[in-house]
Length: 442
Image (tube, rainbow, N blue to C red; front, side, top):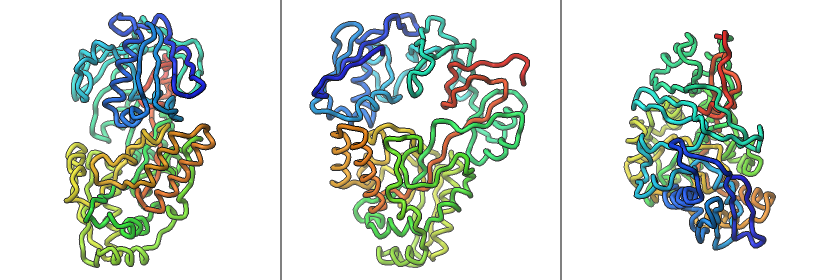
């Protein structure tokens, strides 16, 4: 995008594209590609479907101009269109494309690196896109601005064993690693490496089955679970170093000035096992009863959280069984309205709109939902200023904590460990534009 304008009534956004932009196969990017990509975003993505309720049309005024027309003003629209789910693809590739996404041959973008090879389960190799045209501004706000491809190739190797990941980095076999949080202290102690917190972060919380007839359909039971949790102890057990962990009731990272707030702090900080036992009993959970925890074994910190919850519950005389499966299996199981009670889970904590918060979506009809929450979300979308939007979301977060809808544990920043020869890294996940390798350094 080059420029945009918004009409005085807030119902029409006009985006002018940059000239001379081409896809990796040489095809020019036009407004038709943007229109097709945004319409797919509105149809397929969970946040996009929320946005779609306010969108009347997405159209092309000419080859370089896209117009988004709304039914009613939507305060967070620009934040939502700037998300990764609204990335731009070739229009011809999107015709009949299933929601599962692109094939290897269809992985054609416009960025500084393009796909060279992809060996499933082994590696992905990217190569410099020589025809890429960068913006000139070094900093255009956020992660926008100049993106220079200094490296000839980028090779991403798939290594599942954590010890092999670390040893490979320490031996210089690879230059970059995004490790598990329980490896942070070990890697920080290695002076041959740079260890840095990333912009990305996870919101670690508990998904509860609140289907009708489930124990957690009752607010008292949800409060009881929150009261029984020693959050500092859980964080310590899963390896959360204070450098990358924020113990707060917030749904997003602290750097998010619009959405970060501490509404619900009193509820978050409360810990009272005796009171928890009383509330569980009031909810029908008696001493000796068993709560069912689903754990994802692909992620060590989720498994450890499940174990800690089991121990906390057992301290007040409530049994908890843990069933561990891979991510895909757990995803299938939690769609059901019976057979489970608790699931430790994480969500993206770097979001720019409530529509992007998966925990607020009652997708399968077994998560917390209420008319009050819907009203807050509608008020947020109708806000006319940052200050108004900030207040609405603060009130929403406070309300959700009063309901103990989502017993949040913490927000943990992703982090990376890399060799000292990697320079220019922007600390954003596996993105290496503007990065290079210093000659002669380890």
